[in-house]
Image 1 (cartoon, rainbow, N blue to C red):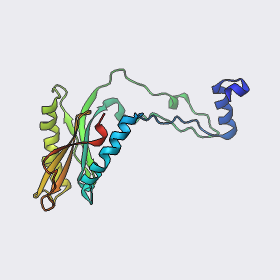
Image 2 (spheres, helix red, strand yellow):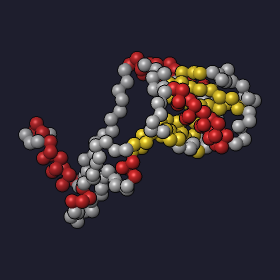
Image 3 (cartoon, rainbow, N blue to C red):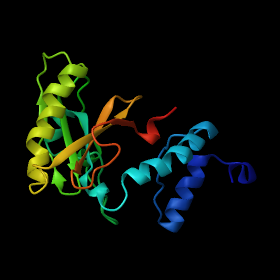
Image 4 (cartoon, rainbow, N blue to C red):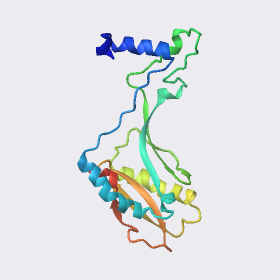
Length: 194
């Protein structure tokens, strides 16, 4: 339309917004996959679905680490909703921002039966694979999995699914009366292949 009417994109967006009373929203960005990555996902997908057959998907606990900024706890939102027909003050359009806010590293998980606890990482600790296994994975497996699955905690073994690229682990408890060929082994997560 900019070439047809010889005006700028901003002018067209403004006129469309005024005439149609519509908002201009950005599309979310997604990762592009190469043909090789698509083929790897298609090849490994059935194997992963076979691992989660019947009701095993209910016993998957996903967990990850994240940074929590301390200045995001004050209730200031990133967006605002203007009322039609009313002029708003300039205060609602601004949000103050710190260049280097204080942050805390945490780890938490979620499963079909609920969420795990939040585990805080001390700011002076060196985070490596041993720290991650001893202070994050081990407490989740020892404390949260028996709480989330109370009837299955005495007869469960585990399968760790390792993501080679992102270095994250997934825990799948499997009951002993349904002995699996993957019980107690590490298998490869299909979407982490490159």
